[in-house]
Image (cartoon, rainbow, N blue to C red; front, side):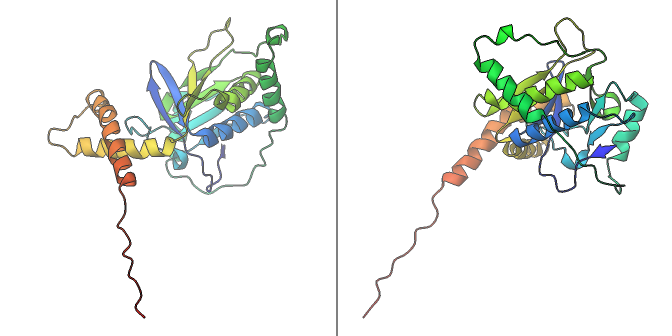
Length: 259
């Protein structure tokens, strides 16, 4: 089991929307995720899994529902049944001591990213045919409270490049890319990586909105009732914070010195 260093700055979250599991972060977190996927695709040790544990998981930036820890699972090497995923989720609620440090190599990722950008910019990119990665056994799901991203090595490399280049196409600070299989192969379920340039600010706003809603009389008791109220209140909290930052401070009083 490989985890992130305690001092890692990246933060992630997860949510389930439109029948799709999403991994949420900012551009920095997405670049880290791409390197985790790329390095894991070259792993040869059986029963290896990368865990992004609760230390690095924030509430989601929409309604502040707590995100789930994330597991990256190489389908060629590791079988992770729901029972084991549940044990891992509970174990990493309070991470224990580490048994060593892994030097994580991502040689070739920068070259692959550059080649991908060249193909996209070249109008003849469709002529540069390459075999599709193996999509068998690919899955993005949440067994046992652990969001599991499972794929073959070749598909991990494809996803790593997609995540690394997703910020080439940003709209109003948001970018996304799908974790999907080749078109002629079926995943058990697809996923998506979505980033916001102001991810941490959105999380903070959602936490405030959720707290204010739950503090009201007759607060909703189910997620289905609570979520729309938090979504609607986020704009109010954001506007309130913007007014505070624009409010001018006290003017300095200038006193002419006497001779």
